[in-house]
Structures are given as structure tokens and as C-alpha cells.
Amino acid sequence: MDPKQAHPETVSAQALGWIDERTRAVTPPIHVSSTYLRDTDNQYRSGRIYARADNPAFDQPEAVLCALEEGAQALLFASGMAAATAVFQALAPGDHVLAPKVMYWSLRNWLTTFATGWGLQVELIDMSDPAAVQAAVRPGQTKLVWVETPANPLWTVTDIAATAQIAHAAGALLAVDSTVPTPVLTRPLALGADIVMHAATKYLNGHSDLIAGALVTRRDSEYWQRVRKVRAQLGGTLGSFEAWLLLRGMRTLHLRVRAACASAQRIAEHFAAHARVAEVLYPGLPGCQGHEIAKAQMSGGYGGMLSIRVAANKDGCEAAAIAAAAHVELWKRATSLGGTESLIEHRASVEGAGTPAPPDLLRLSVGIEHVDDLIEDLEQALQHAHA
Ligand SMILES: *Cc1c(COP(=O)(O)O)cnc(C)c1O
Image (cartoon, rainbow, N blue to C red; front, side, top):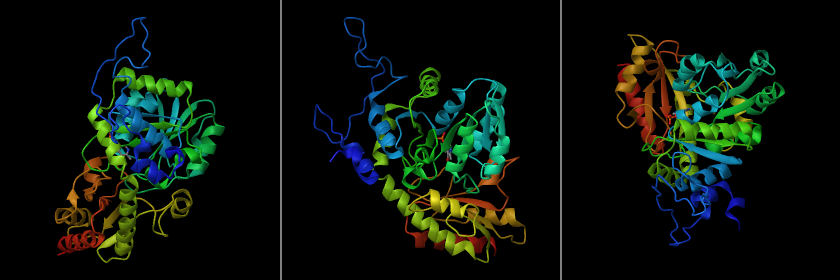
């Protein structure tokens, strides 16, 4: 059986089944060379010249990502932000782009400061409403529509297929930040997206021990070659050791994501009608925004990310949320997501002015611990916050 035709679980568990041809090792070596030998006739038949542009350490992880996302080509980057910003930097000053009001905070911040200063016309809209997207696209002028679904930190769901149609009708590309669902739960390219972006720092690697990013394209194009050039010239290139770690992390992607999804669903249901919780935000709950779209667009679960809005104590709702986060023992009070250990964070404190995160919101990244331990720990933390 050709490993490329196998189920995605098999693709990632075996990293496409490659072996090192010289040594017969079943895991790849770590290539660290910064430069490659030129042939005597002045050619570079290896296809590689210098490791800022290309590195054999990228071949296997990029091929695995292509297979999982059903894409044509993939590029690893030094971080999720390096990957995401390359998508915008391959455009030209003056181009109009649409991005969601509710999205990963650092990227939103970059778009409204640096990218705008560089000349992009950035418009933030309610991306979860196709009518708002339709009203905002400017045919011929809008070059890119950026979607994140489910989106930080409210887990707003956007219909990828519907948004792709609107973007394409206006002559724009659709790029999707798919960090949270991962290819285990959603495959944006199959739904019509042109580019998929991952903060590989999160679920793809899954162990909170490296920073990495990735892009996958549905097809090669002049635009994609500009993205490749942005990586090579701006130098947001991943290190060899990180590429190797990422490949190792991806071998257990399906197990980790499925475990996190199952626990997140249990936690969401447990706290949905809880006296100390005002609201649970999770696309897996029937009452939540976008549940029906998520049901159709995601398969096998609704992701490992949710937020709870803590009910007010005598000092108010923000104080109650911060107090609850202060009293967790198993959950780790830290930013980031997608690791084996569960994380909790008061997002409004991180994002500051202009945040869409309400002051009572705690963002939860559910790991792969026993779900009963996670629920018990949150229960006692909430009890302390309301004591
Ligand atoms: C973390 C994250 C990013 C940025 O990735 P880095 O690796 O931290 O640069 C982008 N989008 C989402 C949804 C993220 O969670």
C-alpha cells in the first residue's frame, strides 16, 4: 500500500513511511548544514544552495503536512506569525484585505499596525456572517480574505465553503488559520480555501517545546512563489532541530487531538449549566454560535479549545475570573495552546484595550490528562473564587 493513499492516522504515525536510504533508519537524521556543494560544472543539481531558502530537514514534515491537508506544497516557517505574515507580505502595498474582528490577537495587532503602515488596506469585519463578507469585498481590489475558525478567544465559527465562494467571486484568495481545528478536524483546502496556515507551535507539534509555523497551498502559483521568496529573503526559516521535533510531534497528532476534543466536550457540558459559570463558549454545544456550521465543517470533534465566562463574586466578574485562574493546581496559568498539558488564561489581561474578550473570560486549552482531574481542579478553583 502506498503510504500516500493510507488514512491520515497512518500518514502521520509513520511520517509517510519514509526510511533513511543510506542507514535504513526509520526516523530521519537532523540535517544541520547551512550550505550545499556546487557541482564542478557550476550547477546546483541537489536543488539546494543555502539553508535560509531550503533545508532537507523540511522535506518530510512539509510532505506530511501536504498529505494531511490535501495540498500541493507546504512551507515551514520559524513561527506561526512568520507563516501568517508571509501570506500578507506576498501581496502588494495598496491591496485590500479582509480579516476577522475576532482572531488571534498578535496577528490582528500586526495587521492593524505594521501591515497598515506598509500600505495594505486592512478591513476587520464579522467574518462569521457571510452577508458582512459579501458587503465588504471589493471585486478586483480585495486580494485576500483571512479566516480563523473556530476563532480565538470566543471560538466563533466561520463557514469556509461559503466564504471561499464570496472571496473567489471577487477575485480574492482565501487563507485559513487552521491552528485550532488541525487537519484532524477540518480540511480547509477541500472546502475551497487556497492557503492553510498553522501555528505548528500548537497542536501539530503538541508538546509546548518549540515555536514553528507552516503554510500549505492548494496549488502552485505565482503568488505562492512570492510567499516562498518571502521566507527565503526575510529569513523566517525554521531551524533543523525544530523541524525534526515537529515531525516527531506530528506522529501522535490524531491521538492527541481526539483526546483533547473528547475532554473539551465533557468540560463544556459539565460547566454549561453551572452556578459559578455565566456562559461556556464552545462550538460543540448546541446553543453556541456556529454549532450547526461546525457540525457540518468539522469531523470527529469541535476542538480542544473553549472559554468559560465566570459568574461574578462580591468583587465583580473580572475579579472572579482572575481569582479562579489563581486557584488552579493542575491547569497551568500560561498563554499558548495545543500542548499535552492543560492551560488556562485570562485573555483580557493579555490583549488589553480593544480586545473582544469580555473581562470575565478564561480561555482553556484542554490537554490529554484525565478529564475528571481537570474538572475537579476547575471546580475547586471556582469554589475558591466565590468563597
Ligand atoms: C499561536 C497562534 C498563532 C501564532 O503562532 P506563533 O507560533 O506563536 O507565532 C497564530 N494563530 C493562532 C490561532 C495561534 O494560536
